[in-house]
Image (tube, rainbow, N blue to C red; front, side):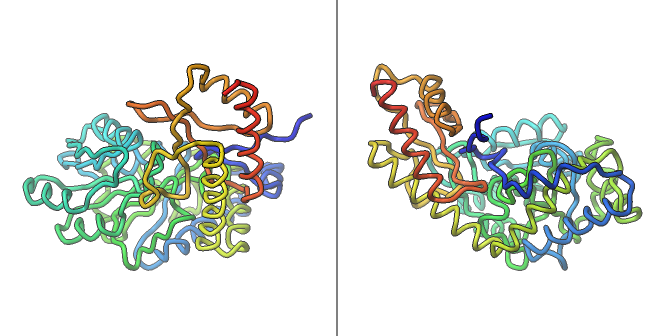
Length: 365
């Protein structure tokens, strides 16, 4: 049997053997032992954002997008008005789900090669008093842009607007501190920078707005207020939890803490990013983004300008050497993406670059 491929994607990610082994036991979803694991995970998550005093955390079954949808439906009143700051594919997804939830939605567009602008947000909030909530993606992995969370949060706080942050690809790696950054909701998931497996999202909700969320969601399964109240009362999930995902996350968090937490994880991912960028530059690849706005999470590279280049063939040649790349998400130009996150180090990135070099030879590029 060949070894597991290394996933150079924005999630699911390569996980450690310890995390995989945690899933070899079956758990009763109402059992006291499993409830203790859930409680431990929730407490640990709150510590990562220094949010124990200001926020609660509500886990939810499903992919990260389930939790983004749940957050919008739970936090935004039915007559609310959401402004989505859009500089990429995941922003567009947030706008679509907001509209599907029946909430009024306005999209404020930016170029996908640029950060969203807090100054432009401020102008829009001044011009339209009906806006109640702002949705932003912290790290827009469509291109890999790091958006200015603190600046956006400051503008929302100054105008007393609710801020909903999709921190799917940033949480656990990039600094997020609830003591200095005000947000009403922040959403992340198990299979990203905490290096667990996919299948569970979680939403941090500011305690000050929690009571106002009662009865706002039009969904039974995705009502985060209901999920929170039930969990506080019983220690249990309302509906069948993803037990193996939860225990894998519990184990992944133990490794995250042992590594040194958020700052250590950011340091390793930054080393991965630097090894990738320097190695790919030697092969003639150019990143799509200006390095000043690039998050060390996933890098978009311009595809080779060569008639023989075909992403599927390139992907297959790299895959044959043990690495999985990610297709591009941009609309105007051909690109591909390489993730820097997961249970991998700079040595793995150097090997990935070598695999790319051999793939180029295979394809005669």
